Image (cartoon, rainbow, N blue to C red; front, top):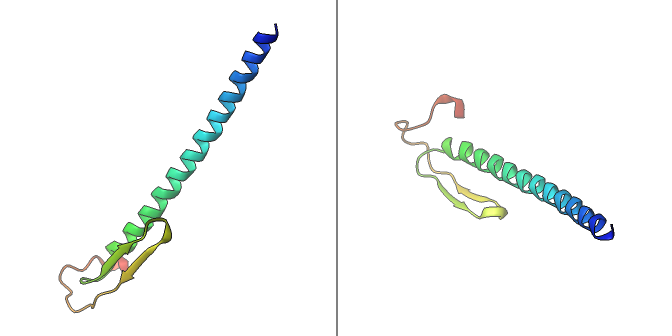
Length: 79
């Protein structure tokens, strides 16, 4: 009786911990995907000659180039 109760308790605890771990990992992945989508949108709108240094979790350094050439510029929705 005691071993059955202990096994049930351990199974429940392991299942609960697994559910919390899954939710935490899912939130981390969604946050990272949102950050990458935001960076991708910003990079797409930069003028030619710009440079980007991705620092990972610490951010991004962007050096904006000149707007001399209009050929190859993205659509007007970036303005």
